[in-house]
Image (tube, rainbow, N blue to C red; front, top):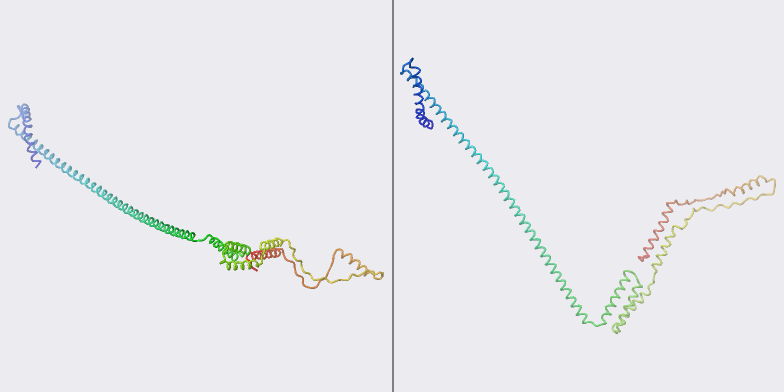
Amino acid sequence: MTSKKNNEHIEPEQNQDTQPVATKDETAESKETEPKLDAPASNKTHNEQLQADHKEQIEKAEKQGKRGVKFGAIAIAISIVFSGGIAFQMQQKSAEYSDQIAALQAQLQNTQSAVNKDLQAIKQETIQEASHAVEKTQVVQSQQQKSIQSLQLAVADVKGRRPNDWLLAEADYLVKLAGRKLFLEHDAVSATKLMESADQRIAALNDPSLVSLRQSMTNDITKLRTIPLIDRDGLVLRITSLQQQVDKLPLANAILPEAEVVEKKAVSQDINDWQSNLMTSMKDFSENFITFRSRDGEVIPLLSPEQHFYLRENIKGKLETAIRAVYKEQG
């Protein structure tokens, strides 16, 4: 369609342009061919050339129209591809943005859940701490109330008592302390003194109703005085001194049986006994350097140095056991 219209527009322009050209050619050709050719033949050739030129121009116009259509189609295709690429990129970006938004939403939900958990934990801790504080305050309050009540009772008891009741309480305390000294520490001297001081407190009351109590206390004091006093410290010191002297004690030597008594021979005055006299004098002289004694029976050998050490340490250990027995009042 575009080619035909273009050809229609091009044809009048070509006719207008070609007419003056034809006149020029005709004048030139008429001048040249006046002597040679006739006018009808020149007109035919001129028309044929015009038609050929017209055809060439039409073909060129059609080719140009086809090229324009091709260029337009290519431009449209390029624009379509470009717009499709842009749309594809936009879709990818929108998908990425949607993924990022979803991730941010999930992160926000996680943070919200974590914050809620932390808030609940803090809330529970505060509630527990508050409950513990309330319980402690209640316990302290109850203890204070009990202490106040006990103080009130003590004040009422003090108000109702007589002044002499303090002496009775003190005597009771001294008697209990004497019993502890006697049964736990086995200290009869301290127990006797405590009982005597308790008897003095009761005597200061000057109350006839306490005569039987004083009688029983006097009997106990008499029994305490009859207990033999043992100087434990002195006994321990004596054992300690013996323990220190163990290293200085001499050890027993080997037990040997008694040697037989040998009568010494006297030198005779007879010259004929010169041989026996010579042997007797030689024995007497040799006994000044070497002595031979014969013993019959078993001989107990001496102890080795290690056995000496073990023997002394054994004695020290037995003395240490004796010291402990003194403190524990064991026989």
